[in-house]
Image (cartoon, rainbow, N blue to C red; front, side):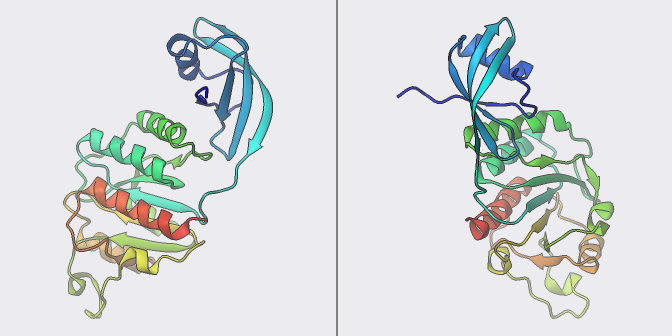
Length: 243
């Protein structure tokens, strides 16, 4: 059986984007008449036929549009402080896309070790993960956002913050205990989960989040690195919301 080849084209105007075209023509040696499948990142596959393949350009005509059904319900949003080492951020972006989520925001926090993110590189990794795992939707990628601005912005659905502080350090009445994220997620509802930097959120940031409607949650008894915690959170949201 011939391998199915997937390419990403958000515009669907009959010509593959430059990087995708280069891969099709120079690496895979595809030529006129070959069949390819396209993803628009917005819920549709397309069966297409290459009409012209030359140099670094590849033109196609759509044979059939194939709308896809969502594999999960709700809108799954992960907001994390990026790690100092970019390879860990990139690893998370790839694996989270393979699992499945809807939106990624990077947070600039008090204890952040990295305060600048090149979104172009991360976006390419999201596209690669989407093609590898045959996802019909590409996660939305946002520019780095100040923590205060993020938590004060209105958001629909459930809102959670993961941290390692003792309950009495952050809860005003000193009696609140953190439930496990997986236990209190509600299927079908939008969910936003905050993951802090290696040094954790500051106590002031946690209290600010709680004051703005976020709930403290636990990801389990193990102490996790930032990118691992972020991936666990995505997996929890995905498991609870699978269709």
